[in-house]
Every structure is written in C-alpha cells, then in structure tokens.
Image (cartoon, rainbow, N blue to C red; front, side, top):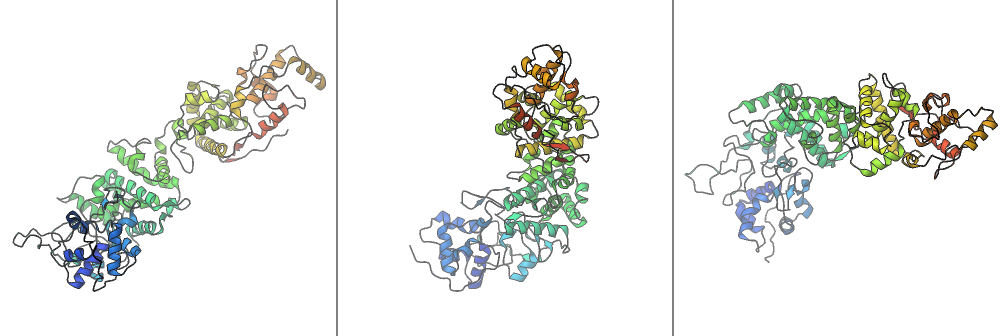
Length: 607
C-alpha cells in the first residue's frame, strides 16, 4: 500500500462543516480538481466502482480506513473527521442503512443525499456548507433569521445531491449541478449559478419558526428533549425527533389551509399557500416534507407541531392536537386509538399519551375510557400483560369496598349493582380485558351485561369525571402498593365451616344475645362470608336458605365502619385467624374519594 502524503496546503474545517464542503474548500484553495484530490486521499487498492461512488457518499459515511487516510493527510484527529459526516446523527435524525452510506428515506428526517443552505451563510463563509443543512428537520438559519433555500435559483436543481464533477476545480458557493448546455464537453458543464443570491423568507428573531428550530437543534445538541411536555420526563433526541416528524407529517396531510393559518404566523401560511398553488406544486401528502419549495413546508409543519409539544402538560397538549384529529376525520380518514399510533415509528410514550388525550372526547364508552386511562395525567395504551392482570385479581375484591362504592352510587343503581361493577372497572383500567373476562377473574359476582349497564349509568352521571379519575388513581395505587389481602385466594377458600352452630351459641351466651331460630345465624354467616371473601353474600353456602340479604342486616350496612367482635369465629380452611383477617380487611381499604374528586387516604376503621 502506498503511504499517504500530507496535503501541501491545510484548510481548517469550520465548526459544524460537512466533510464534502471542507474537501471542496481544499480543492478550491489548491486549484486541484476533485478527481485529483480524491486520488490523493484514496488507498491504491480501491476498486474502480469505489472511485466512482466515494465522493457522493462522503458526507454520510466513511469507512474506517478512509477516516484514517483523510486524518493523516490533513493532520487532523480522526474524531474531527468523523464529526463532519452524518454518521454522528445515525439513529437519531436519520438512519444509515448497513453502514454503506445510504440514507434510509423518511426515518424520521432522512434526506442526507441533498442539502438545504442559507445564502447569507454561504456568502459570509466563502461557500462553506453546514452538515446540519442535510437534515430534514433543519429548515431555518438561527444566525440570519431566515428559512433555508432548497434548490438552485437558476436551474432549480437540488443541491449537493450528486457527486462533484471530477474533472473541474470546485467553485464554492455556486451550483455544481450538471448543466444542460450541450455545447460544452460532457463532464465539464455545470450550472455555476451564484447560490448566495437565492431568495429566502426573512423572519423576525422572535418568530415561532425560529423558536421551533431552536428546540430541534437544542435536542440534537443535548441528546434529549427537555422542553414542554418533555420537561418532567426527558426523552432521547431520537424519540423527540420521531414525535416531531409524526405530527408534522399529519399537519400537512390532515390540516386544512384555514386551520393551519390559525396556528402559524401569516408569512408562513401565505408562503405555503403560494407553493401549493403554483404550477409545480404536488398534492398534499406526507412526502411534502421533502418536496421542492424550500423549507417552507417543514417550517410550517414543525412550527405547528412545536405549538403542541411546548404545552406544559399532556392534557393541554392533547387539546392543542385535537384539531388535527378532527381534520383527519373530516377527510374521511380513520383516526382512532387503533390507527393514531401508526402516525410514526419509534415515537415516544409521551406522544402516545398526547394522542390519547386528544381522542378523549371520542371515547364514548366507559370501558374505553378505563382501558386507555383517559383520566390519568399520562394516558396510555392498554397492556396485555398476564402478570399485571393476575396481580390486579389478587388485589381487588369482587365487591368494591363500601367506603368507595357509596360515593360512586347514583340512581337508579343500587349498592349491590355498583360494588361489583366498580371492581370490574378497576380490572379494566389499563388492560385489554373484556368486561366478561374481568368479571370472570373476580369470581363472576355479576354477569357482564349487568356490569355494562351499571357502568353506562355511571357514565351518564354528571359526576362520572370524578369517578373515572378516582378509579384510575386507585388502580395505580393498587399497582404500586398491594393490600395485605390476597382476594384471589380468599375467593377460593372453603367457607363451609365458618361459624358453626356450637360457636354461635357460645357467642350468644357470652354477649347475652338471643340466638334465634336459625335465620339470625345465617345472616351473620352471610355477613362474615362477604367480608372475608369479598364475594356477595348470595354466594355463601349457609346451612339454611336465607330469605333476607346480608346487606339488610343492620351491622353490615355499608355506611357503618367494619369492625369485628372480640369473640373469634372458626377460621375457614386454609385461612389465617379471623382476628388477623379482620385487621387485614380493615387495612385493605386503601383510599376514599374526597369531595373534590381527588383520592386521599381513608382512616383505618377501629379494630
């Protein structure tokens, strides 16, 4: 292998400069054709195919031996050379396929094979090109407060799209696209237009588009997004840029012109209208982000998207996004929880929460509101985790605690209808269970149809919002702090030996209570069964038929605090002592609903 020679004249790369721009500056300074410079920097074992492809892929990817060669020739650190390629943004703002320098189109801002530019920056730097101009998410110059240009002002071609003409000395700041002039020899004809004269839209320093561009570059520089909805839970720059692309593409695809005009400044809205109405405009589609027309379409889309993502919380961001949901539905598109997640790939959970918050008015059924946790601060898609369902079944009684159910009961529903319905509702929060599956996991205290009717009545109540919020918070609390009682195990215990007649007679003698003819002890057995098992008293296997429900027993009314007599009953087979069960039962009621609809701890009833 021939030893690499040092370049005779050194040209220092500018901060943030692309490697093809730097090599072009070297060739221009030394009066060398790009082909000769390429030969000087190429190992002598390169193939002919590589010699033809190398210059066009330099801005995107360099092989390790290329990095070493260029670093040695220019007397630069290898890290400096690598920083001038798009490999630094691989997996963040674009994707380089298989390490071969090919940009994966469309993810999330992949347009690395061409470059936008700021005419004023080219004029000031002598035709040097920034690497970030190749990113689709960069549409404005923060130094000169203007949108970037996309094409040559004379020939209309995209810039930096093809490899330089090998037989010519580069002319920085001018269009290097092949000319259509047939009078000149092939390979020696280029447009040569002065790119510093390209017209661009000037913006004021506090323009929303400038602020949006600053957010994007800040995320790229810091490696994460910390603004707006990401402030409390920062996300990596990859996810933030994917979120921006997902919403920006839908702004252009679903947003009516008048709706966009209400959300971006007039100069951007007018510029977008002119581009769309021109003879060369293309139909509105997601690819409009990468079409010709300068950076106007990306600027409009990202500015409108930033207005959503800069909101302080998920709820406000969802309201700000709702116009886009309605816009898509007016176009006949299916926009719901099942399709809105397909707006983009590799998006963050924060964007999913914003999308679900925007869809909240469309969740008509109570089941959907519970399943997608629409009342939570951060809504989410339901989980199909069997472990989560098993944990919830162990922590939720078949009949919800009276301290909770009484505050949620509304006419015409009774407590016996509301308690099992609310328990099933807790099982539905954040899961993919159906109403029937939730009822089965809780012992089928009530059929699915009855639960659905009860939830519909609660849904129509003016207090449903508070009830939904309380149920969601209770489900979250039970998911993090398990109660001391395993209700799933309690439902499977054998209660046939609960309170034998002999023990009942002893309790009556010690307390001076008439034992009755049998109806009284059966009522007490039903009461104990309901409190210990969490199942309805009607499921109790008492020795005699009970004509009166245990809920009619004064000592079992829901508004009285649950307490237990000093005299112990016989424990059911395989359970702990009744006194311990009573203590756990009281402490197993984790919360109550406050008058404001929030959730706060309930006092532990007296033992």
